Amino acid sequence: MGKYAFSIGHHAVRSTVKETVIANIPSLTTYVLGFIILSYVGILFGILYLSFIVLALVLFLRYVCTYCPSYGGGRCPSGYGTIASKLFKRRDISQFQRMFKTYIPFLSLVWIYPLLGSLFLLFTDFSWFFLALTLSFVIVGFVILPLFHKYYECKDCPNKQNCPWAK
Ligand code: SF4
Image 1 (cartoon, rainbow, N blue to C red):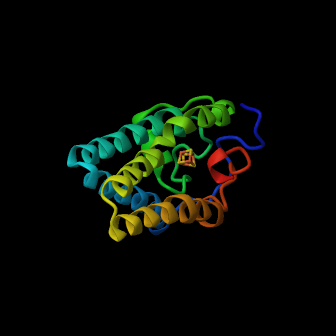
Image 2: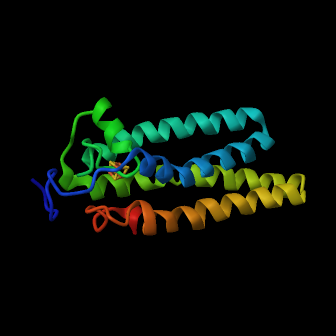
């Protein structure tokens, strides 16, 4: 089955709708702040950023969630595993960690693009508003989001020892 300590029949608690909604708030806030920042650079950049988010999420479902033990069955805290099971077939869970690590550089662009946009705005058209927007993005995306994953979303996940995101 794979080298991990549990199989696809592990005893993860099924997530409720409320928990799933809460689990998505920090990442959605990160995307919205990123979109606002890049829209100030130019609306086309904002739209491209949203398009990139959609692409990154679909690829995440296909190339990460399909390898995850929480694929399907309502076990995934964020609900992605359930969506992935509707779109793509399950893959070999022993490859989960390798697939996730391979995907991280691509996923990191979700944070890098708004940071580049922020730097551009601050250097070319500084305002306290842009500075506050940048700090909001940094606090939500680099502080609240990882803490949230560690202490809320992923805290009961039986896969957290193998998941680069939960560390
Ligand atoms: S726990 Fe993470 S990798 Fe696994 S299905 Fe959910 S979102 Fe995807």
